[in-house]
Image (cartoon, rainbow, N blue to C red; front, side, top):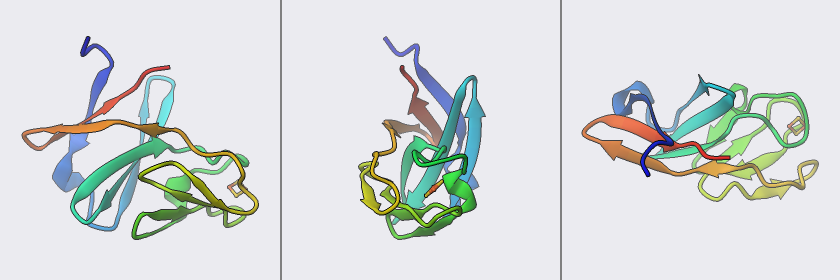
Amino acid sequence: SDDSWHAICQSADIDEGGMLPFEVGNFQVALYKVNGEIFATDNLCTHGMALLTDGFLDDDVVECPLHGGMFNVKTGKALCEPVDCDVKVYQVRQIDNRVEVLLAE
Ligand code: FES
């Protein structure tokens, strides 16, 4: 079923090397554009109350603004202290220029 795909924005809304926060229902979603490709993770850091999109994106690594924890935005992998829990990644698809994210529990 396609019921859980949610249209979030247009591809051009996100700058190359940039990221944007979105709230979709109960989901906090971070979208990132890395080398023209869009990736999505949960936007809440797994270490505390911080939004990853308030941090820094360097290539495919996002750094949390609060304590400097880092995650790979393609895999969600926690890369360094103090984060030791991966962040959830969401599947992304583009239809024309519309960016859709698969949001499922
Ligand atoms: Fe993100 Fe602590 S809240 S590293």
